[in-house]
Structure formats: C-alpha cells, structure tokens
View 1 (spheres, rainbow, N blue to C red):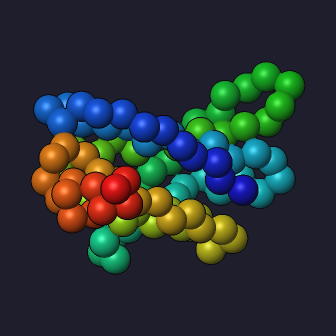
View 2 (tube, rainbow, N blue to C red):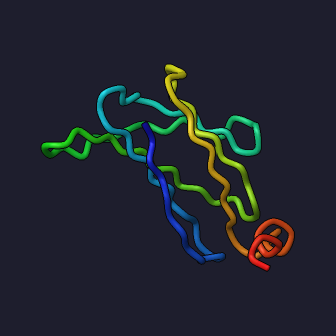
View 3 (cartoon, rainbow, N blue to C red):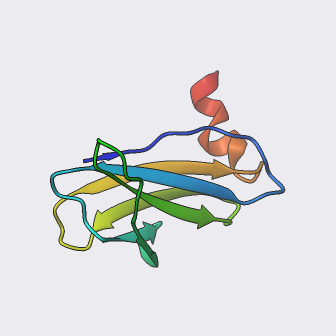
Length: 99
C-alpha cells in the first residue's frame, strides 16, 4: 500500500515526491507515468527500524498541471496523483475548485 502526500509552493524549484510502502508487499521498483506516458523508474530504499518501510523518491521538475501514476513493477498496486507546479495552468485546473 502506498501513502503519499504533500503540498508546497516553489515555482522556481524542483519538487520531491516521496512514497512509502509498508510490508508485506514492498516492490523494489515503481514505474512512473506522467499524463499517460512512461516517465521514469524509481527504486526503493529501506528506512530500517522496527516497522518495515520502504521509501521511493521522485525528483520532478516539469512545470504545470500533471497527472502522475505510480505502478509497482509486479503490478500489485498503483497510485494516482495530480500535481501542480508553478503558475502554468493554475487558473484552469486549481482555481476553479477553490472558488
């Protein structure tokens, strides 16, 4: 199971999206799709400790509104996330839901 969240406003910087996966079923790799097209494969690293957790970091830099899909390599689970970076597309995709 993936848990991911975060909010930030840094239109001039890249963002890092961190996903967490708890045992059982922590895949070693996760494929990332941006707007339906393959973007990257991210690999997990183990956080250690008494609770077995693997983390996945995606360093994302594309400005505007994007739909991200994270799919485990073994197709066991997936996560959909919408991301807004910078002001491009803000009035069309975000502001209409705030008013």
